[in-house]
Length: 287
Image (cartoon, rainbow, N blue to C red):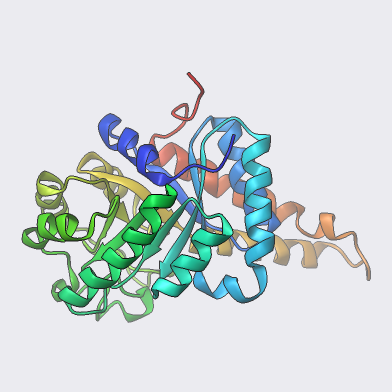
């Protein structure tokens, strides 16, 4: 199966009230953990690449994602996560990404619209989906600031106009999550999310899915979230696996595949949990 855009994938999820799990990936071990469990669980998944991976890893990640998509039966998207510029989105689209996110969330509203529309106008003729962000999801380390400050939350009144003016396929919303490792439990504004969902014509995305309590994630999915982003929990699993290997193996030159065995096992556990949490198991089967 070829890489697919997120548009149809998320519209199906929205209609059937589940979410598609989206995982930031950095290397072969991340990709293996995600796609092997996706096939096992018959779940659609989204492989995401962060901008800092572009300088060194871009061609390798694209090739690995394409190969993975060809090897398994479930739908896989390759998605650029949090691009700050049109130029980076264009490079990803030209490299073969099936979807991109343009993040103008820190810009004034009109500048966010202008930047997002420019990306959409380039992407749409090429069959590439576009995600944007309205409001701003901050960092967990600053949880006394933008992660929880309602001044950064998405205003439901802005949503229909933003979608109409940009033509985006999916909208990331700020309702109380944050990126990174939480220092205290977040509290999602589900009422705000429900209000956004009522007026949004496109599927909604929740960033900061790592560490968000399961009950709140399930409530968010029930109120319109169709894509859940995860990264930090995979990173923790990778490091925990490496620590376990180092503590229990004294070989000076172990086989690299052995070094990552425990990490892949732990990352797969995370992926299974997130697929079950999203309710996407069995949703990627072929008709």
